[in-house]
Length: 107
Ligand SMILES: [Zn+2]
Image (cartoon, rainbow, N blue to C red; front, side, top):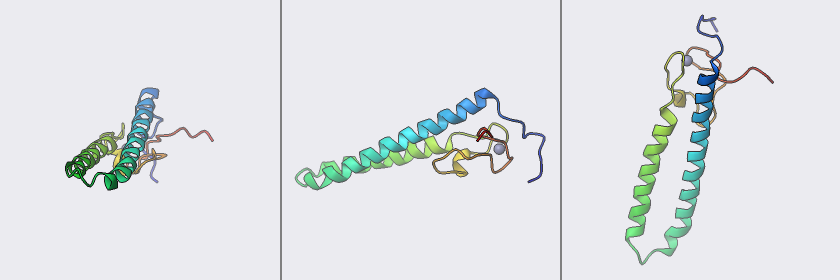
């Protein structure tokens, strides 16, 4: 990789913001998976209530929209590239675009 003048470590505020984004994303996906699992158990028991699958579908569409927002809203503090495009769940070690280190290099 070509060294860049922008590869100095992130400030503690920038690092804290990335950690908060990562934590919020993990919390959101945990809640979404719990809701979807609950829906899978509820759905077979509600055949006499035809509105239940519609509500579950609406909730599913809502979760997909919010999930996309949560994942793609955060950007690299240096090059402004969306971090959600670089990784699905985990905060990458560094930006794939500019090489800015997102995590400490400590073992
Ligand atoms: Zn970057």
